[in-house]
Length: 396
Image (tube, rainbow, N blue to C red; front, side):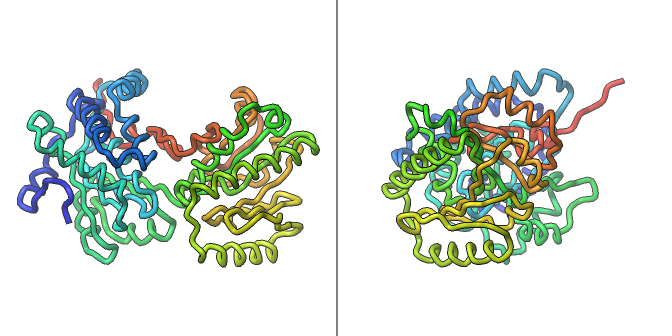
């Protein structure tokens, strides 16, 4: 069960380690070493998500984050032991969750996906390589990686001995895990099912010199993880003159299709799911149209109006609804608490800031350029992870 150099004999001792300060020098040195260790792996070139994780761990990046987070956060230490339960369909998520736990001064028990991923193997191999270097013992002893099936009783055990339980997964997964008791002073941080959208300014897209770059960024946001990530867009909002929207749609989807054709491994069963989802969407929503595409690699559903229930028709494998909006404010009619990320092209930060300031949004926690929806941040789903996973000691 243990993937790191941990034995049942010393497991209890690790859970009793005292909390440490935020962004400790030992953790920063460890993460920098982990970044360098991963870069040595010849498998890295096949996995951009692991490369992004390695890049995040660099000393320069962590020091910049430290400067930001510690500016007004004195006298904070870790809460103790964090039990992280990673999602089954995003390979590198477990590692980013671990980083948040380490930087906030905690010992970490991390359940990695039970499904086999080479990305997980690369990172675990690097962590185990560093465990052989005594200079990193203080951090190595705070990392426990485990792997087991959902039927295993381990979740019950780890839940009883944690100070915070971090759960990444679908709503049903979270509800099932919550059946396992935690200490009265412990609490859950949950990252549940979310729905994300993209908004594209067609008036600017038609004049964009590198339109393929935008399409490639969109591909990375969606198809790299089969549209399973909560940050992957499912609804595309187009804005601009009708003629520019039509021209931009034709060009954008054609460029995207060319990329998909070369890079994406389509599973035939997904074709049935797309048809089924479309029929269900057609029954429940008014005025929708299936836009003909070359094959099942890409499905487009044209909406004549925005309906509040559009998030119910979230599907993976390249299934997109799209709508031509007259005003950016129209999205306020549909956004609910399930909405996480808004990715964009052709808008300034001021324009997007005005959106937030002038209309009331129940959801949307992140606004990022197209191509960056998977960029990890220590502020995620509206949580400040460093402050959430640490505690402040008051001095009067």
